[in-house]
Image (cartoon, rainbow, N blue to C red; front, side, top):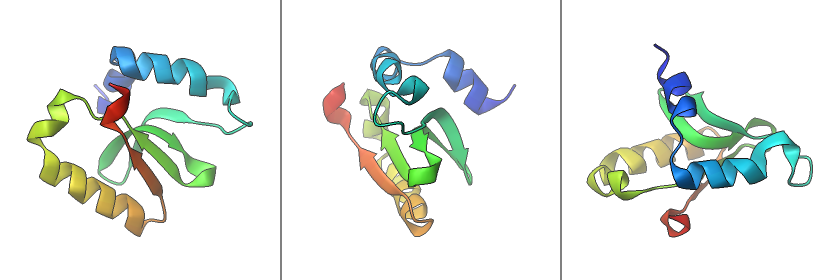
Length: 89
C-alpha cells in the first residue's frame, strides 16, 4: 500500500481541520496537497507552485526531532519554505 495514500486516509483531527480550510483553493486560490511526497519525505500539506510546506507536529514528533530537522533541511535545500507548527495541536 502507498504510504502517502494511507496517511491521506488517516488524517489526525488537527490535519482534518486544516485540510477543511486548505482544500479547494480556499485561501487566495492556492492549491494545497495533503500528505504529499517530496524526495524521501511525506509532508502534511504542500502548495507545490508556491514551494510552501505546512507540517503539523503532534506528540509523535517529540521522539523524532532529528528526522524532522533532516526533513526540514532537505526541503529548504529544494527551495521550500517550511512552516512547522505544533502550536495548532
